Length: 82
Image 1 (cartoon, rainbow, N blue to C red):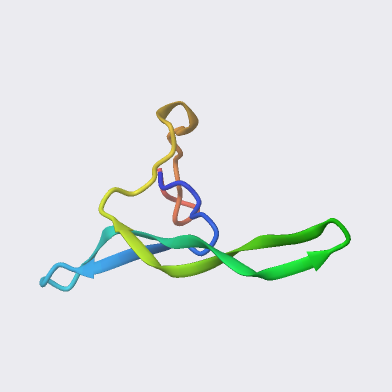
Image 2: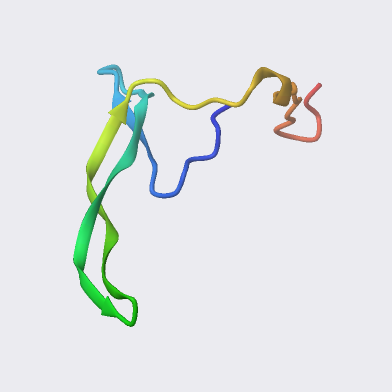
């Protein structure tokens, strides 16, 4: 029921100490707009902005699908499962 990850988003797993993994959260890129060098054009000088990755931000809640999009499914592992 997890939503698809965004571009460069990470889903983190944690060890519970009993040999099992559990979903621990997600991380998204932190972006910052910084000024590039000045550009001199025909209309005068202008400054451009550049997007720079500054790190990751951790969220403990996972993004899930809205309930109306989730439908129950029956999965059979072999031909004689009922």
